[in-house]
Length: 484
Image 1 (cartoon, helix red, strand yellow):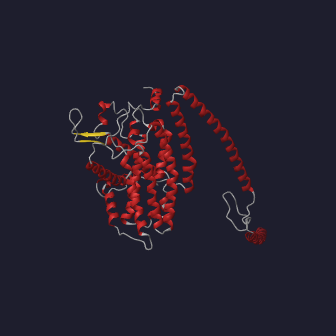
Image 2 (image 1 turned 90 degrees about the horizontal axis):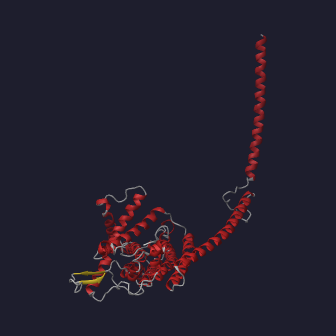
Image 3 (image 1 turned 90 degrees about the vertical axis):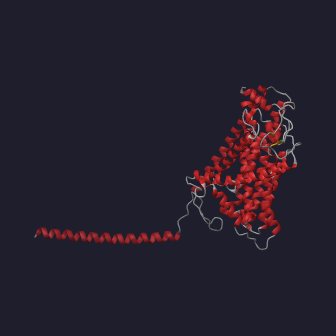
């Protein structure tokens, strides 16, 4: 299959007859639903414990230090020790707080974090104990708790609801720094959820559905991160801001506001916040895997060994590998980049990600409409896109020249201003000099320097006179000695 055919297959809508059957939950008994819920909770908790070890060990290697290496093999028991420490520490309640809101904050954060995986498909239909015809199975259920036509909207709603826990925690703590952290979190989540949602809309357009299982099925020819790469990059940046991780960890910036919304929490209440943050890291990784990386599918998995790797529990392995790769990517970013300022954080979200996501969304919608209604051939579509990009380059070039000219004029004006004598009292009160400026010499210091210079001149003259007198005396003595 050449590149043109691959792109054509990616742009074509999957016909209803060729689409795989939707997940069938009709033969899932109630006890199996409870088992799925228990498995999701246990797997996420174990993943958080292992994720803590991976993060600490990985950051240590990046920073040329050993990291946890004492408790257990390779320090694996260190995370268990941290969990036991959090559960056994003294539980502190601050005076004068609203205890209901104070306790609801961490609970909302943790419970909403565990709800996202309910609609994430980790595999296809799983059948156990079937007859030769594939019927009368002991277990016949999708590897997914539930699916709905608006599963992705459910994910966005749950992630938006989780910020209420942080806001309540900061408000109920009756602490200025905690309140600052919670308001920062609210503004940050709103800013980056918009860019994240726009990046996912292009996936909806290409897949023709908002159901997570149908989105995974639509990525059978090619994963969406290939054809929707700009949306994938936007989502990766937005997901780091969504979970408040470096370089976007403004809500709990220890250099400014201690621990933010978690400053007044201890023991298990703090552990709920901590658990919710790391579970959300796995949540956004799972959503990225589902939307852009083919979910539980392997590249050409249906053709390898007769589709063996897309049956049984094999898909869960591929899904887990992708999720852990994205988790480690966030750890890698934390060990590489430094924290940005809050104004830079907002600027990236509103002035960077939002316009790019909106422009990409319009482009995908136009291409999808042209492809779906066969308004243009593929070659005509490529020529049209080339013309659009050419016009965009010309506009960028013209605009860039104007910006460069203004920047040169600004730099020249600053240099000329720097050459002017600096007046510290020009605004009515003393101000320190800016870089490149120098304070004028102090009159008192000038007078003192002139006085010292006069003294030095006087002393120098006296010394010169004495030296001259001494030299004359020596010459006279020498002459008298020679005459004798």
